[in-house]
Image (cartoon, rainbow, N blue to C red; front, side, top):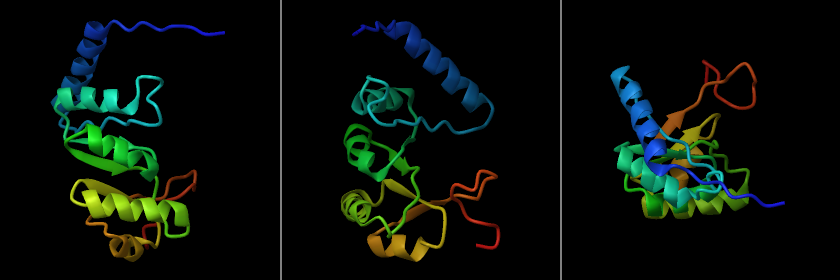
Amino acid sequence: MTFTLHVDAPQWRAHLREVADQVAGAGATLVPVVKGNGYGFTAPVLCREAQQLGVSTVAVGTVHEAHTALAAFAGDVLVLEPFTPIDTAALGVWRDVLAHHGQRTIVTIAGDHLHDAQSAGAQRVRLEGATPMRRFGMTLAQ
């Protein structure tokens, strides 16, 4: 079974603007997350919408999504999946992304891999603390 979804673009954009204004009014920074194919909108379309909102950063789920976002968005791209040198396939992608877009890429560090990330070319990092889920994240001591 297939279906077609029609989006009222002006109404959707007005809602996005309202949310962005509320976030800014609260003194916070909005970082839209663009993962996968963006529920069918596609990552490039959502990155362009984020650009029109005037945000300075978008986030992607994995390093494998970074190239697409970096091509479609002029600001910074935060990769939410933590950097680890253990995933050798991802490590190659990390090195390529950082070699070409190191100034615009923010690498998530959630363990003892800061030096590994720097060796791969990371210039900017985000430290992620451990949560009660204990999926990943740094302890206070780390």
